[in-house]
Amino acid sequence: MKNYRRLLMYMRPYLGRLGLAVFCIIMASSANLYLPWIIKDMIDKVLTGGNMGTLNLIAISIVIVFAFRGFFYYWQSYLVSYIGQRVVADVREVMFRKFQRMPMAYFDKHQTGETMSYVTNDVAAVQSALVDNLIDLVTESAILIGSIALMLYINWKMTLVTLITVPMVGYAMKIFGRKIKRSGTLIQEKMADITSLLQESISSIRIVKSFVREEYEIQRFSVENNLNFDASMKNAKLTSLLTPTVEFLAAVGVTLIVWYGGYEVIHGAMTPGSLVAFLTYAVNLANPVKRLSRIYGKMQQAMAAIDRIFSVLDMDEPVNDKPDAKTLPKVRGHVAIDNVTFSYDGQHNALENVSFDVKPGQMIAFVGPSGAGKSTIANLIPRFYDVNDGTIKIDGVDIRDVTLKSLREQIGIVPQETLLFSTTVMENIRYGRLDATDDEVIAAAKAANADDFIKNLPNGYQTQIGERGLNLSGGQRQRMAIARAMLKNPQILILDEATSALDTESEKIVQSALDELMRGRTSFVIAHRLSTIFAADQIFVIDKGKICEHGTHQELLKLDGVYSHLYNIQFSNVRD
Ligand SMILES: Nc1ncnc2c1ncn2[C@@H]1O[C@H](COP(=O)(O)OP(=O)(O)OP(=O)(O)O)[C@@H](O)[C@H]1O
Ligand SMILES: [Mg+2]
Image (cartoon, rainbow, N blue to C red; front, side, top):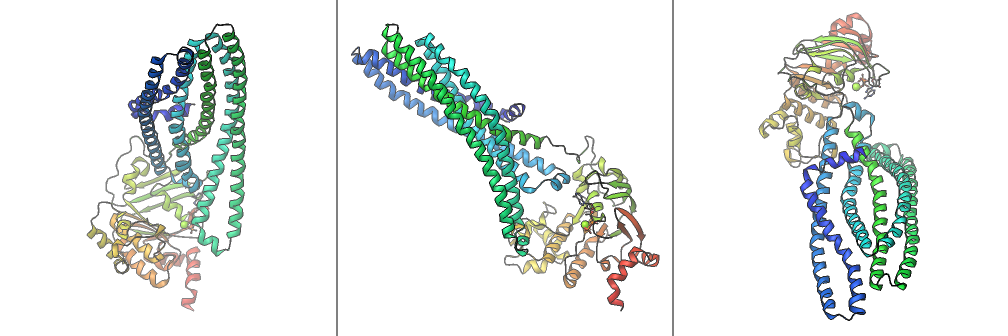
């Protein structure tokens, strides 16, 4: 309930419209109350009294009432949809903002499909809770209250008899509601599983096909799909049972009233017209009660989605700006890592007591076996994660004391796998610096040796890139990434195996682009191929999260340790 109130806070900006909407709903629904009243006058005054004047009045009033009803109906639908869609759009945006701010650790732990399901399925559930339920809730409440008031006016004793059944119905609703909410949670969870599986399987379709795992994937999907079916059926069973139960209880009540009302008319305590009107209201009472119980079920289901939305919005953002975070001024590029220990999961240390000092403009290389912790160092410098122990300082400033924006703006990263957005080549490079002119973009592409191949694309710089850049080769994508970094013009560069996926020929082209990019900047280079790092000012050999050797290429060869061993393996055939 607390979360529901929080959701209602999102309606705050639209309170004026909401008030107007409620007014329109009440006006539109009160027309429903008018019909039984007409029946009363028809029986008592027109049919038995033969009053022609009343008949004419009734005829005119029906036309007028329904014209009014139409007018208010239009405005109720329009206003409620407006508020509902507005709130949903706002919530969606708040969630998207939240996900943009979430730390990398969140994305390590959660599948993309799960995150997408929050923003699509859960927000859609909120929409139906707000739009459909709000109209029904106010309409049915208005009819309920209006009917009871008119019934009390006609015959209060009979009204009391009628109302005895209401608490019974209420109790039944409460029991069902609790169960429906629980099964609603289950359905959403199963749906999220399906979405994850779908996302994973479709985006990895290349791998699926190359391993001929289609049947395996179908099998996996089928299992999840059936679990969702079971959960949905459990929910359907409950909601299907709810309506007949409530209706039966209502029917018992109606029987009581019919008998008692007939008794009153036979003994002259009530006119026949009043009885018919009363019965019409009483029977119609079942409708609002029934619909309200359905709304209750839907609300319970939506509550599960709302709870999930707020649990996402309430998640910690551990890596974030301190309240007094300063802007990091333009740095020279002196990076000092002091005794850093870091663990992704809180159990195994990915880095242990790592220390080194890099002077502005130096080129540093990391080598070592897979899983040693090289990429982890690269992740810590732009503060994708916070160190558990020790400090990282840039130009003498602890990176936790400055804003993430000012820190990351001065660091350029060329990753092993470049992701491109589905827009033009021009816009993809401009991602490095949004206010760059077309000429600056082209200059960056030239410096990255990318201009030649871009010009040969069907529409040059305006060529549309396919999803994730899949219609470009690995080397072309990497040169785009280098152009991006050129445009960003950062003082600190991180190249995580930027050339490892390339053949020797492409590597030469990309390497010369990289050499151009690294000039005058502090650069961290992670490489498996030692040939790319001979010129490094310092080489660090990392193993099991620790620095085990360091020095220049020549010094490390003389040391005759891990590095020279690696060197011998890679170059043995050259020397033989
Ligand atoms: N996001 C993550 N969550 C949890 N553990 C991780 C994560 N990334 C890496 N690790 C673990 O941290 C350790 C260091 O990984 P890291 O990626 O730094 O290795 P690496 O030296 O870059 O290896 P490679 O040469 O294969 O890229 C490994 O044991 C790895 O399993
Ligand atoms: Mg790595």
